[in-house]
Length: 287
Image (cartoon, rainbow, N blue to C red; front, top):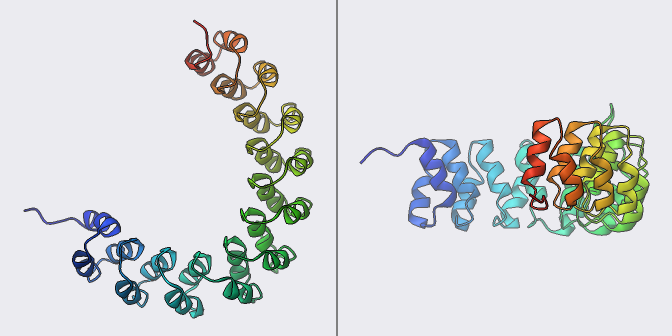
């Protein structure tokens, strides 16, 4: 029988169900094999505890990521300030309780505060505090903890409304992406000065037709492209975008399942081959 390769052992370590086999794999000399055991949802508590003290960072980080890792182990990883990767992943783990997240929201390390903002278990009053968090000295290209709050799917509407007016474009962009952002806020962000914010609004499946209509006339083709992709875009708006000067916008119109047959008939004759092919492949195209 051929010797099992390292890659095969890594793959097996991630899905193995036999405790006996997992006990063998946890002794493997290859850190990625042990890391696979650390990620495995079938790994028993005794092995998770053992791996949490592994010499290799990747193994400890995977233990911190595993959603079956109990807080008794996560607590040790969080307290280790010298292993930032495992610490941050443990903070993000859904098994970390709200009381601990509340305490960590005041940590002097802004990366810790950012990660607290991402955790779905972070209480609203903690998210409210983090929504006021200041940028790290020297600036943060993503808006720090406020960005995390804007991204969090448990962030309430009143905070999303507040962060929609944030001075950092990356924070507003995350608000525009958030599935809980209300139509009124998306309409406001449709007029944002930042191109990437408008693109995110155009991408959001909750963006109302009124906002999509504004964005369909945007000067940036990347914005119009996303309007043409959005399945909430009305047939009349898709007909308008079928005449867009940019071929990539027309191609997305041709691919949209809501594009009416009349527009597809026009696009099937488009000078660009990718557009005409996409139109002919659309189920609404009448042959």
